[in-house]
Length: 360
Image (cartoon, rainbow, N blue to C red; front, side, top):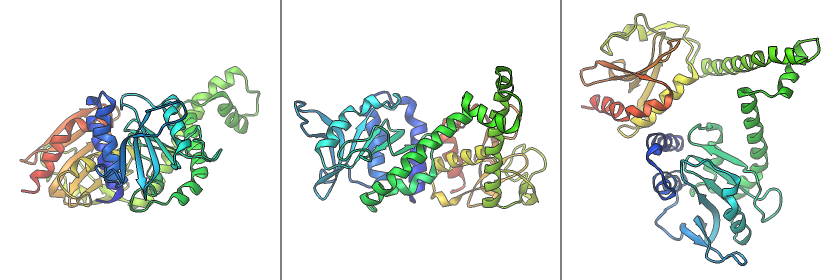
């Protein structure tokens, strides 16, 4: 399995199981140990590679333990401190990491709750862990641009010098991106004033601020959507298949429609839904066998890029309601109302069964 497919598979597992995980130990077993073994590639059962409950006495602190230490050539390289998946990460959780970082040879420290991984090093002062992470990787909202940096931490391609040299840039780029994301969600007065003063000649009064606050939010949202659509058009081509009528039962109904060219805009939400279905289907077939075709009425997810092997359809074009359509053994589509993309995971077994139906 390719590295990005391993990431997608672990993300799917997290989404599917996280509501049943209530303790730190359960979080370790379900999410963190698979991350160390499957993603980073270290043998969690070999104490020469992974030491659980690692102990290194720190001053008057005796017998304190860090959850995992990853070893290379007999030296500690990565320290990992774990918290339960239901608990958001806070800087206070990193107190043991700070202490252990100073008394081991580790240059990388990780704070995680199984869903979010915060990576630290010592950019600000040598042998002293920074207060802010240089890399934040979130399995709930995967930033695929970070995969090359995450790959550098794997057993196969571990490159400490490259990691450290890139850490400074990653740290500030990450902080800027998170700041931009926060401003796009809820712009503050300074952000609103910045744009208002460039398009409005009057004074920035309270009334003007109230007038331009929703305009700035709307303009930012539309700009991002425009950029996404432009990139999708470049990646997927400027024309996409079209459907005629809404599907009513069999996956063979709209075969001709899927082969007809028209200007269809594939949305980011549809692609995210496709990635979730693909990650679920990976338990049955290789990920490269899962394909998609967009259409005017729905977004089809297919096995082997074959119209007669439809696994599911995403009906996301409605103004208010969204549906996930899953096909049974008789090629009938069963639609399920979903409130969010996370609801797709509620139909994991039905998706897998739809894949298996095409393998018989």
